[in-house]
Image (cartoon, rainbow, N blue to C red; front, top):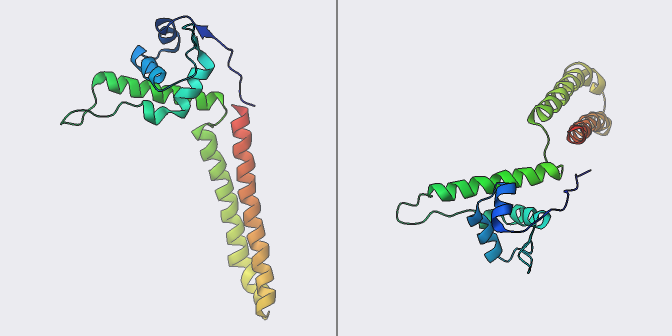
Length: 166
C-alpha cells in the first residue's frame, strides 16, 4: 500500500526550497504554471506540490536556449531536481521495484520455462504425437502453452511480491 505523506505547509518559497531541496526558480515556474499547492495566504502545500512536479515533470524541465542549444548549469540542476522528485514520488507510491529482484524473478522463471520446453519438445512431444492426427497433436500443444502461461503468471506474482517487500 502506498505510503501517505504527512501534510506539511511551508510559509515561504525559501522555506519550501530548503526543506525539499528544490530551487526557488523551479518553485516559481510551478507557481506560474498554476500549481494549486500555492495558497492565497502565501503558504505552500508539500503534498500538492510533489503531485504537481510528478505530473508536470516534462513541462517543468528546462529547455535548451540560444544558438548552441545547451542547457545552462542552472537548468541542468533544475532538471535533476525534477527527476529526483519524480523518482521519490514513484517510490512513495509503490511504483518501483528493485532491479535485483526483477532480474532474479526473470532468471528463475526463465530457467523453469527452459526446462519445461526442453522436457516437452525434445523428450515427450515426438513420442506423444507419433501416430496421432492433427487435432490430437494440437491438444498436446495447448497443454504445453498452458504450462508456459502458468510460468509467466508466476513471474507476475514474484514481481508483485518484490514490490510489496520494499
